[in-house]
Image (tube, rainbow, N blue to C red; front, side, top):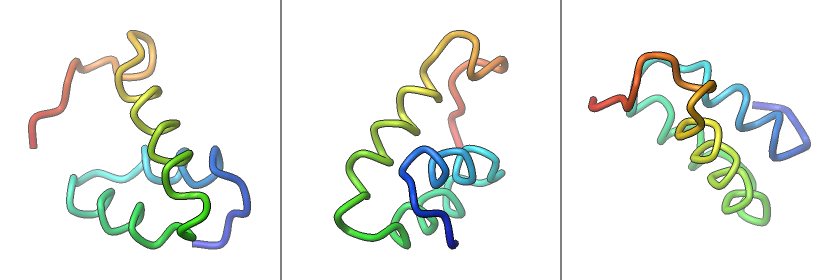
Length: 58
């Protein structure tokens, strides 16, 4: 991963297919950006228009 902004990290994480892949990618985000990136991911994931298949359960 080489983005520099939390939303760029979040965009890449959201494009990943598996939960394990997303967790590993979040762990690779620099520590000082990790919580904000996690917030962006959770917000997008839970947004009605951001996740058209409903909550993912994997």
